[in-house]
Image 1: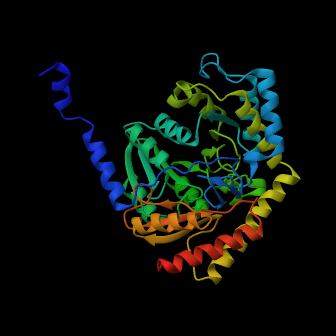
Image 2 (image 1 turned 45 degrees about the vertical axis):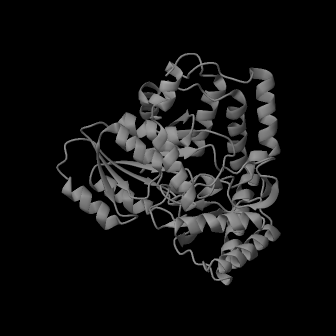
Image 3 (image 1 turned 180 degrees about the vertical axis):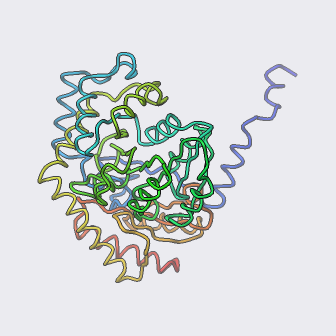
Amino acid sequence: MSEFGAQATKRNPLQYVSETLQDLRAKGVAPKLRVLEGEQKPVCPFDGREVVNLASNNYLGLTTHRALRKASVEAVRKLGVGAGAVRSIAGTMKLHMDLEEQIARFKQAEACVVFQSGFTANAGTVSAVLGKDDLIVSDELNHASIIDGARLSKATIQVFRHKDLADCERILEEHASFSGKKLIITDGVFSMDGDIAPLPQLCDLAEKYGCIMMVDDAHASGVLGRGGRGSIDHFNCHGRVHIQVGTLSKAIGSMGGYVCGSRDLIDFLYLRARPFLFSTSHPPATAAACQAAFALLDSAEGEKLVKKLWANTKFFKKELKKRGFQFQASETPIIPIHVGDAAKAFEFSRRLFDAGVFAPAVGYPTVAEGKARLRAIVSASHKREHLLKAADTLVEVGKALEVV
């Protein structure tokens, strides 16, 4: 037998990947990626079909805003298409520093550092500020980036039941004599159910037990607070949260993440946050677009967009409830439609798409087994007719599948 033939008869060491994938497809829980063939808008073409878009995190419709487009184009003309290096070597442009100062002012913090994504902002910060001798007390429904950052830190991890303040305090009492640093961490808005963290009470616990308080405001920035300043502003917890994380990829309409806090914290992250140290910085077009977005949020137009987002949210929820849908946990533009069985949820989403509405299904591992759902997200750019069509289609398909 030739050498090639002998190699061909050997078992592929990645065969298990193919087998697992085949199993997921057979169960109906391995959907293909939907491909957007135009701009990210409230009605747009995916896979050759015009659909009402309830799938995007583009809360304020800024991905196509004229001010962001103009800023991006001008930055490319003046500064080129890339930064050319990591921030810690030669990739820190004045544009990056100006953006960080702008975000810090917006969030009413001393300083800010911009990361390449919201995921790396969370993971890089938690793993930089905590170590193996420390304690992390985390809400059970926190984002995957928080979970990964906690694991990377090698700290002791204790998880409290979702938004359960008594359970959180039980853990803190049990670790009252813990000698290392202690961190309480929570999402500001939880991405799968759209509910809001009990931030003032968590701050009370952090102060009582001498903990660092950290909030991931990815889905709260641009949504809650004055002009979309987030959950800290919403609850007037300024000065009580030591580490604020946000994203530039959702309501801001561009790409990236950031951390706000004290000047010393940010200078420390410049030196110790691995994603910051080992990733090339944002291209000028991205940084400039983010600057334009924050300038917009800090204006009358930004306030108007946030109000429109909430008006659309209230309207759509009211229309869904009239049609028999229930989503008691949601307090924000994130609207979960619970199905339970993952295969049924993905079939629900597929039939909706065929009928002209894109509301993606979410199953394990994004949510727990048996808690699959559709997740619909409202934006400021949706019109009433879009939302009415979506509500009518959801109930029509939902009844056929006995979901509603």
